[in-house]
Amino acid sequence: MSALPRVTLKPPTGFVHDQRSQGWELLEEGPQVEGEPTLDFFGFLREGEEYINGETVLARASEMDGTESGQHHLERLLAQAKDIPVELRPFYLVATGTKWRRPGGSVYVPYLDFGGGGWVLRFGRVGHDGWYGLVRVVRLRK
Image (cartoon, rainbow, N blue to C red; front, side, top):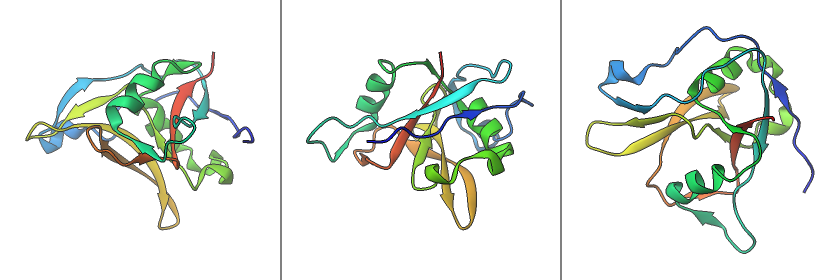
């Protein structure tokens, strides 16, 4: 498997997509963007796996190289979307450091998705069992 390119982030401007306006509860904000961090992108499936549930993704993400990223990092990346390498377009880029609870109890994490000609920020349900090979966990490079 070839290594995916890295991206260096520009300084932050704060939360842009604050889900509290939709009635969501912020469980974990995730780390702030400091300086101009570089992001790495990792798969999480092990040999023989086609998909796993989100809880397992979160557990495996905590064991990966680098430091956990959060929604602040994805929002900064989205703000400079022209800098996201084309090689990352097939992937869903997930930040596991920010966790939201929707009314009704389900927990969600933010991710970037390339579709309709551009990158968009979305939220994926952690309890969902369909976390598969096109998902990449975003980590801050050490």
